[in-house]
Structures are given as structure tokens and as C-alpha cells.
Length: 428
Image (cartoon, rainbow, N blue to C red):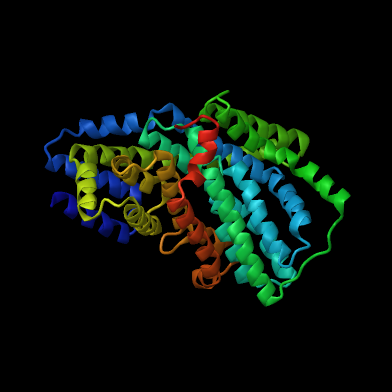
């Protein structure tokens, strides 16, 4: 009863626009006091929650992504993908999605993808005759590939909260789902483009294509450093973030020369602000996660759900519905901190591979970044395009449907998430 009341109060605080980290911390402290537990537990859990080596990867990935997005890598990737698929009907829309797939392997950020690629391709698509609403919808939906295709900050958070999970293994568990979502978006964008008679460009020629590939090749180096090094066991995800940050600085400042020393203070400030938000959320949700374990909430939730059905497929459907609803109201990191301690034990009871479950959780919660009412990345798309949420979401519906189809596919075909990491010996 106390837990149910706490949930109601928590939702009321969110409706009152109280920042989720404050709401989480307040509810956690009140619950501890009701249970007669000393508040030293809250302090201890916050410190222990953020004093974890793998979480150092978060600011390093954020910094590397910011440097790469401002250092000309996004522009060169767009040029290559545009040359590769621009000759197809709706080529600029396909290039937008393809660039997000490549840029996702560099930045790992949905908002960075929308800001970098959207600021270039939304005006370009509009100039070529595409509707601005459609151009923005393509940008916003394909930007979800950033946090799914490795490197993935949500994957780092999941591995930390779940425990005994390889970050490299989870990176690769998300790889095929990310690629499939990208191709599904391309197919839907092509169908819409043919129906609306959107334009196509002339093929630039093989030599120009090779030239543009060479220009964008350095951008893929960040992906190879992070994913290649971690999967090969050469270094950890945190060390990969540090190496990728140095690599990004060298490429952006020495080779491309599009980033100046005067740009670094702003990048460092943005990195610090974003990291502080993430870490404060991790700290406050660590208290709440400890309380959930203390109150046996995961066990009680598992018993309640298993009393309804023990069918693995039905449980997966219920989990998808739960994750979709939570993702629409709560941002990815706090939702991960709240749900993973509950869902991982449940998954273990019904035989769901933790890497398969991790991919399902990451994809679902990332989808929440572009769904109302919270949809933080959707708001970024509105800011870049100067359009209303209603206008963008109306154009998103068929694109989003294609994403949901892939989500269901990876839900019921676990090999799509486990085959690659298992082949490389990262999981059993």
C-alpha cells in the first residue's frame, strides 16, 4: 500500500513539472523515513551509485560525440551517403537515415544526431521539394539509431545496473536491431517518396563516390575504436571512450581543422552539464533501486506477473507494453535505473537472455525519446525545424510503425540480438 501511494505521489510530482531526479530523491527519502531506515543509507547509496568506473564512459562518449559532430564528421558522412543512395527516389530521405546510422556509430546521441544532421538535411530536403514535416519526421525517427547502434550510453547504464553484463556484448546485441530499424525506415521512406513523387538526384559517379567515402572514412574510425577494441578485449568501454575522445580531437582539429581551441570550452561545459544531469539521476535512482530491493518489489512483481501467465511470449508482450508506456513519460536513464532491477530477475525466472532483454529495454526506452508527452528528442526536432509537435508526429506515424515492427521482430526472435555477441564468444 505504501509503495502504491508512493507511485501516485511520484506521478503527481511529474505532472507538476518537478524534475524527475528531485521527485525520485524526495520519494526515496520519504519511503526510508516511513520504514524507519536512517538517511545515511540515502547518502551511502548515492555515493556508491555514481562512484563506479564503467560510468566514466558516459562523459567520455558525450565529449567524443560532441567533438565529432562539430568537427565536420557529420557533414562528410552525409556527403558519402548522399552519393551512395541519392539517385534512388526519395534519395535525400534515404541519405538522412543512412547518415544517422553511420553517425549513430560515432556519437551515440539522439539529440546530437538531430542537431547535426537535421540542421543540414532538413533545409536541403525542403529545397529539393520535400515537405518540411516529412523531412523532420525522417530526421527525428532515424535519430533514435544514435543511442541504439554502439556506442550506446543506455547500454552502458543497463550493464551497470544489471551487473555481470559485458558492455561490449550488449553493444553487439544492439547492433543488428539498430541496422534493421535503419533499413525498415529506409523502406518506409522510399514507399512514401514514391507515392508523393519526391525527387531523386543524378548518380555522382564511381570516382566521386570513392572520393566521398575516403572523406568520411575517418568518421567511422571512432566506431571501430569503440566497438572493435571492446569486443576484442583490448580495453574496456571506459578506456574506449577516452581513446575515442583523443581520436576525435585529432581528426577534428588536426586533420579536418574545423574545430578550434576556442570551441573546446563550450563543448566541455555542455559535456559537464549533461554528465551532471545523468549522474544526479543515477544517484537519486540508486536510492530508490535499493529501496525496491529492500521491499522485495522485484520478487513481488515477478510473482504477480507469473501468476497471470508463465508463457515467455506473453510476458515479453507485457514487458514491451510496460516499457513503451514508461518510456513515453520518463527519460531513458531514470527509466533504466527504475526498471532494470525489477525486470532482469523476472527475465531470469522465465529464461530470457539478459542481453536479449537488454536490447528490448534499450530500444523501447529510446523510442520514448520521440514519443509525446515527454519525448525530449522530439522537442529538439521541433526546435530545429520550427514546427509543432502535432505536425511532426502526424508525419511520423508510418515511419514509427516500421520501427515497432522491428521491435516485435527482435522481441520474438532473440537470435537477432544474441547471435553476434555469441559468435564472438562474449556471451554464452
